Amino acid sequence: MKHEWSSKFTFILAAVGSAVGLGNIWKFPYITGEYGGGVFILAYLFCIALIGLPIMLAEVALGRRGKQSPVNTMTQLSLEAGGHPAWRLLGWSGMVAGCLILSYYSVIAGEVLAYSFRASSGAFEHQTVDGIKGILNSLVSDPEKLLAWHTIFMALTVLAVAKGVRGGIEKTVTFLMPALFILLIFLVFYAMTTDGFGQAVDFMFTPDADKFFYARSELGQYLLDANGEKIFTWKPMMVAMGHAFFTLSLGMGAIMMYGSYLNRHVSIGQMVLIIISLDTLVALLAGLAIFPLVFANDLNPAAGPGLIFETLPLAFGNMLGGTLVGTLFFVLLFFAALSSAISLIEPTIAWLIESKGIRRIKASVMTGIVVWFIGLGTIFSMTGTTLGDIFQPLVGNISLNSGLFKYNFFQLIDLLTASIMLPLGGLFIAIFAGWVMQQDSTEREFSFKNRFVYPSWQFMIRYVSPFLVAIVFLNIIGIF
Ligand code: TRP
Image (cartoon, rainbow, N blue to C red; front, top):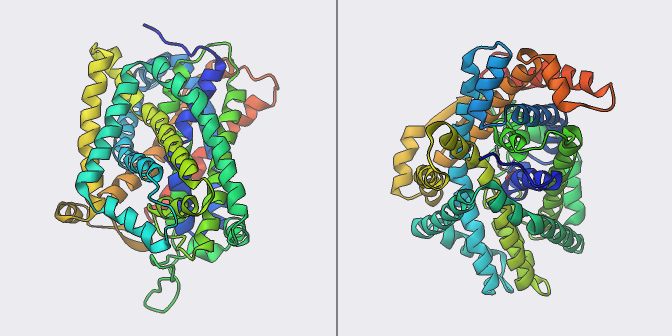
């Protein structure tokens, strides 16, 4: 059975549903905090415009032309263009990346679900900073609790994809995404009333290059080499670029998959602009909602993955109607995560159905179980229990150019996917769309109205995007 979105609006909703998720509201604020604000956000915006935009256009176009799961789309398109059959590996690495990302995504989404219940029970009311930290700690140091929530989230994801993309996603997204957006704007207004707002705006939009380019400890002090000099590092650049891919759901075929369900007559350019603008807007709003609370309460912006679970509950606990607003917020964030999770797993499910003839329900359950297992690694690296210590030596220390970083399982998977597999996937998508495919096919797929748009895209996808991705990579592995 061939699926198609009911209208171009459902495509926008589904693609925005995929793009907007934990990446915008959980990850973006904490990595912005870790890498010093201003310049990090600039680098991120720069990557969105010069790498994300051309590659998203390419992914949608490839998907719509191939009309299948990414593996089979790549096989068919490379056949059509006389390319090497190995291009299908792009689809394969996408499926692996999607499952790996989902394995930790689900653990965090589980925490969000847990927080919906905590919020609704009034647990945050009149809490102090220490009280809030205690609540977070009692969750993340307890493997059984994390496991239970992770299991629930994976089960719901499986249920949603098993129902099929249209049945599952369209309904989830139509009402809940707009609601999340409105609630986020409300939170920004609340944040404006706190006395950390000025400092937050300063932190987010005043560039401080040192904080970005020189390695710092978890507490924010600069690391020094043997000569007492600050240590230059490309890692923040790598994270900013990786996050551009992550937040737009690019580089692993999710958007290609959704493009394959898109009707031939819809203008791709317009769709992609809307998706990217909304995604970026949500991330910036999340920053403006969260950082004022960080500064007003003297918290550490570099607190890491726990950042939103420390800041927002404080606000909910101290505002009028906070129990209701807090509950709503975490519930909506949970649905935003669910609509992203669906897109992480759908390429694998669609491939199992197409190529292995497995029924959708069975394919969903099988994939879900595999992902659930990988997720255990993240749980143990969060709780820091003995099992986490078993993972640690396996992972060990990884040396990146100018800096030795210690990784746990969660951080390793995050590094491997967001910073390596997605940009590499994006690089190959760019090369394929720009150099391997016939100009004719891409031009017809886009049908841009303005005649300057296609040559601009072609220039970007051939030269600019691959060049930028390659530069960051070469620096990271220490070639320069
Ligand atoms: N973009 C989503 C977020 O920001 C996560 C996500 C969904 C994703 N699908 C993806 C990331 C595909 C990379 C690739 O939360």
